[in-house]
Length: 550
Image (cartoon, rainbow, N blue to C red; front, top):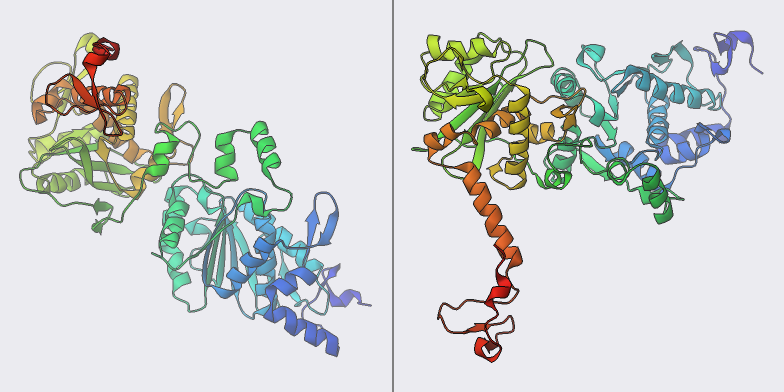
């Protein structure tokens, strides 16, 4: 029987620090068995709160045991898991084991929202309270957002942001639902916090999430599958949860949607619902690391002599989440190709033109089309007047025709660059959809693909899903609007609309052509079928009219 001075702040479930503990022989053996085997510990000593039964003993499924062992045996783990598979419970069981049986370790529980991280810590605290007293470490500090044990172990719960954990070092970082952390936060987090992780020889990182588009989580997962990073990938299928079968699948789809089921339970990296680009096309897109990378500039292909290039520019409004961006296209031949891109949320608008200027010069004096709704007009003006760059494209208003692209013509309604109106955005977006889905603009850039997976339909327009970015996507929209302008044909001698129509027409003709008919070019009244047999038309009369469809 414990006295009040042996419990922590009057909580009978918690042992106070610096309280002497006598162990029986059986307890020592049990302690050693738990320390050596985290699965054994979870099965025998971890209790969880069940919605139906209240406080119950944790009985891990086979895939949960595999997860715990992977966490224990590997430094870097990434787990792609469906919803409602007990990933939080499994992770809590391992983190509890790590804190109790390791001295002087710092554990970070980070989630996309601080409240979610604190909820995970709360589950861990509940499990800790229900450990046998002889197994507990004495408690020094016990709060909603952190705790400290007398063995020196500390656990912190916070949001996944650089500021939340800046300056701290961790022995283990648990990143929950990492796919739902906005890209700009994930980037700054890894830039500031990650070096403290990788510097240790035993430091662990556990990244667990349901997919949410082709973002940073997708990149880590994809690279792990290809063996391009140190992460050990663990993929859990919804059917591994007992009780989930085809009948359950059909019922879940009936209550939600097939698209939602694919994202939340099949764990496909489909991105958002109602994306501009068809999900089937997004799934087929692949990325490669750039050949050169420097301060936001990623180069996939250097300039080729006599090739023509185009740069489309989207200028940030000066907010840290917003990026100044441009994309470089090789427009020499059709299909076009993205050869470089720039994306930076720290560069000042006054300095941005210099970056564009240097890149444009290196790409054979590329044409530049800049979006000028906000501070973009300053960028375009600095390029043209201060840096004296000649290939800055202009636009003029032509009545019902709207904005029309030109270069160097005068008029009262002429401006440097293009204003992103509703019409320009709509036309550009729809043209972009056609070009990408027909493989007429080729790219293998991760960040462009990532933005397209969250570039969705909203209120009769297209924009980034909340918490995501569309700066690169808007560069592509500007490009897609430009290439269907008459002036683009004059620039490149390429009529994009005509080529798209011809390709579509040819495809229709191929689809409608009679199967097995081969023209041998001899001009006789016969044909060869798929089996290689020759047939003479005069035996059956002329049936050619049957194949006319125009």
